[in-house]
Length: 336
Length: 267
Ligand SMILES: Nc1ncnc2c1ncn2[C@@H]1O[C@H](COP(=O)(O)OP(=O)(O)O)[C@@H](O)[C@H]1O
Ligand SMILES: [Mg+2]
Image (cartoon, rainbow over all chains, first blue to last red; front, side, top):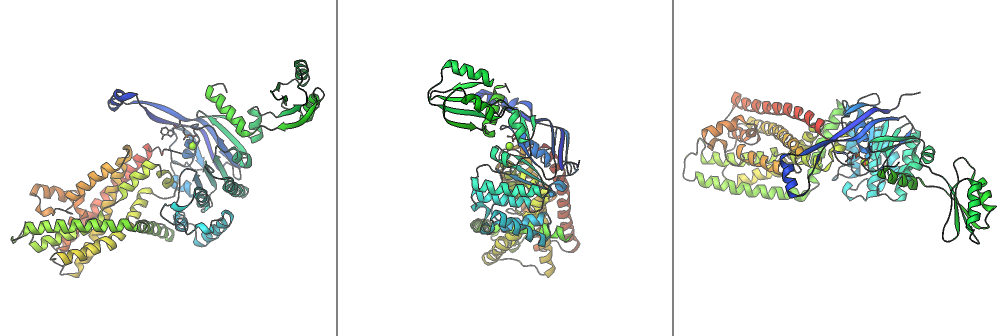
């Protein structure tokens, strides 16, 4: 197999943090004897991103995603472990590495506030030493896909969030990077802009760019990611495909049946025995049965219909959103 | 090489564009610089009134010194300290470091753009105004103009490096403004921009001549007066260049150190 475009092995990063004592006297004590401790933001992280692959880095706020991104792009020196991008150590050789890497932070601009978008692109092309003719071609193509043409003459500070996001994505692609890193790129965007960004990122991956994406938008993950890495409290807790993640999170479908006359307790007990799976009934007489992993829906449905008289039937797919929300909640309680 | 020229040319141009993006700022800077020039020039004129010489300077030489030193200081007064400090505080440094550029060089190149704008839209109008308001002693030899221009250019290099050091020193603080005003006071007092170095007590004047601040205003004024010519003039330029080089080394070492401790917050 080919080498990954970017990888980490046993990546650790700790921060020295100062803890503040409470109150006025605490503040005074802090002034003289600050209380410091180290905080591990990333612990023992192994990550591979191959050419043409979109890897999602997921996890609750503070899990260590941005820290990982910063280690990969040479902004932070790892405390321990190895990081390579295109075979180079990004910390030691940041300038060389960032020539081949495109980065978009959803919460931060890489453009120049006072310059018109086109001026900013000209400058980026000059900084990246993209030959003029190549640059013009690329900009034309990006402007068409992202509909940037009406924005090119505007100063960056006058762009709306969605317009800026489109301009930022184009900016991170002008030098045709081998690795594209997107840190919460769709934060705060409307569905139209999100869709446009996703289409372009997909397209890029198809052409061979390796993509690392951190996001809280699980539609991004569903639409884009070939593989996801879930981190929690600085550690990787899951790695695999999106369907595998669903299974791992206990994502089971449910059959919901609205009944004409509410079944009695005996009937429900009988149903539970037959489907060998939890059965619930709500106040409106809707029976809900969990479809156990590996059992066809039709099978479960037949069992249910043989016991109750159905007026309406639906099958509920778990959303990744809901599953992760449950999981984050359990993780926060320390039971996941 | 061609690529490097295009890159750095574009960054200098950015400095120019950035400065022009806020035209009102340029106008206000010119207004306040004019007020300082007229006030400070008048004060020194009054001090010299009726005297044949103040220190070694005739009254006309004194006004000339005051005008030229102030004009030069407007060009060498860097903004990189503020810029770097704000970038650090806002986390903007992260996107700067993601560009394949050496950040100190990038900021210096931008500052060269700023200095070019300041030379044209601030220093030259101030010089014209100063010449109209005060009696000035103009250089007798054409080469003096070249020496003064070279000296101001070296002053920009020295000022920029001092600015970078101040900016980096602010990384441990929440705001850069305190350090910047400290630097501005030091510069105003020690560079000759407001008080001619030659009128300071001997010990102070000697000390100031050893510090890098004299490169920012005193040296161009002194060359303009043709008080140093030939080898002596070249010596002054070499001293400025030496300061620029020494500071460049200190900047480099501090930058490596700062990068190691930088944690690029946010995101
Ligand atoms: N510069 C810093 N100094 C101290 N702690 C930090 C710093 N940057 C991040 N952290 C801490 O490291 C952890 C991971 O942060 P981050 O990687 O930004 O998380 P996220 O997954 O939300 O992107 C958090 O607990 C955060 O508070
Ligand atoms: Mg983050």
